[in-house]
Length: 442
Image 1 (cartoon, rainbow, N blue to C red):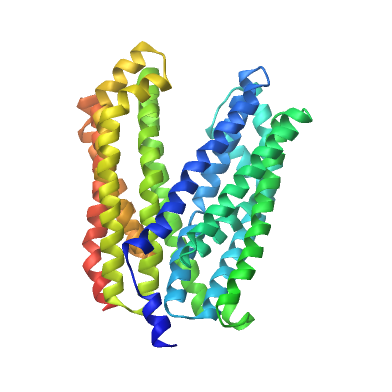
Image 2: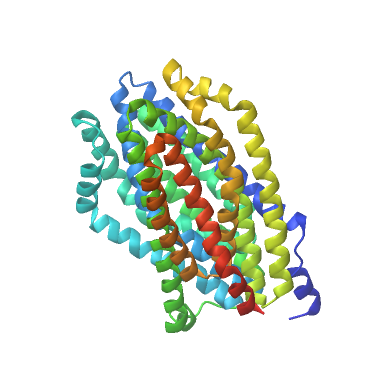
């Protein structure tokens, strides 16, 4: 390896952070437009049951697929480390293992579609008519599982290489193909809900095919060959499985915590549920922006870890976090300034509008309170220190339940305070492990 190439690979600057973060932010913002388009198409069907069916079916796949979100996160860290170490064969193997795992899990979901469907519709009661249509959606879209999960792996691989623009191209391509076929099949051919599901199936298969083609082209820049021995190397495969297992546990724990927040919102009454649902939109949109810088940390920290370069690691953590912290302040200010206007846009109910204003401050301060756990997640994913992430999630979720119980007398303010404490504890627990992470690299 030449000194010139090493120097180039190990330079971290504001430009390198933004080159990764900005395409991810744009990609994140484009994703909700897909749900908006599906809702608009179903809204033309003349009955709200069609909107409800697609929303219910899509929610099931969001929950199932995000359980396997480690295919994106774990692949990013492992690929970035291989790139940082200039190991072309491992870069290939990281992609190969991730796609194989995605295919195996996807095939397993297809085989197990009946129990998955049974459990999902038992947990999510949408009424007889809506559920009947949602089952049509489920029965069609489940066949895209291997391709949808492969798209997770491909996105993680490209981000790990620092090629966030390619990940953006794939996401936009998927969205455009989806919108085109959804409109054509659902409205043009009159397939309704089945058309939406088929359009999404076609889009996910098409995106996976394009992603594999672009990956084949990208591999031309990295020396090495495909070898079965490296791909199925027992030690490396075991590490991949261990990293992904811990990230999966961490993801499930976090999902359960947010599900608890939603369940307790519902128990507090229809108005409180509506209020919290609206305010969570602020949190979600803020996460779209902050996630870009967390992913920049994943990639750059992963490269530094692969190169065993502590200085590069420190610069990656420092610059990505500085940008994320600054953006979080902007987001907090924007919610304070424009939050009431957004609430009025999202609902016309006077009672919900009034109550949402009471709790708006919680949604406004969450970007500043949460940015640190997002960034530390990115750093630890890049370093593939998934055990610490798993432990931090378990501890933080336990504290969340304790805080929820302690703050019960404060009603919805207490619920939001528990959520804020949850994110602060995620940051504090990962911060506890941070010095150990740096020592290991040094």
